[in-house]
Amino acid sequence: MNVLGLHLLLELKESNPQLLDDLDHVRSVLYGAAKGVGAHVIGESFHQFSPQGVTGILSIAESHISIHTWPEYGYAAADIFTCGSSFEPRDAAQIMIELFESRSPEITEVRRGLLSLPVGAQA
Image 1 (cartoon, one colour):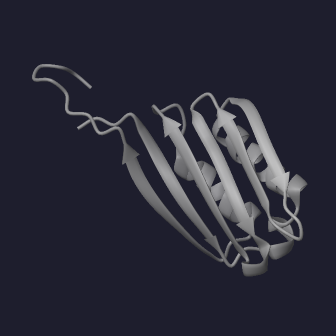
Image 2 (cartoon, helix red, strand yellow):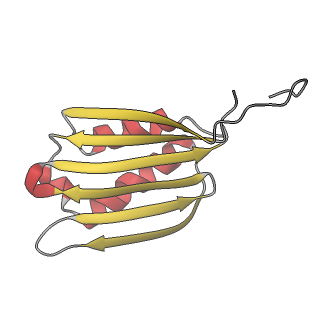
């Protein structure tokens, strides 16, 4: 089997609430994760909610890195989707875990676009 992409779903539990509610920090973390693994940022969108919370997405040439935070619960849901193998998404996840100070992270890995190769084809 061959896959078109790898999608990591991050449960960033027991994270630092102040960091999760700081739009500049959230943007910096996503950019840091992208740059840290050599991803190529091609666009962004971020929003600070009132009274709290941040949502954001980086469009990267390899797909995307996104997040939505709930500071009141010390929690963020994030995902990293990459097409191809130009970088290791688990390394980007580790950067995010560290920079949000998540003490109880969980990562679910989903292989996207499972393809069966025709007989005789090479991966």
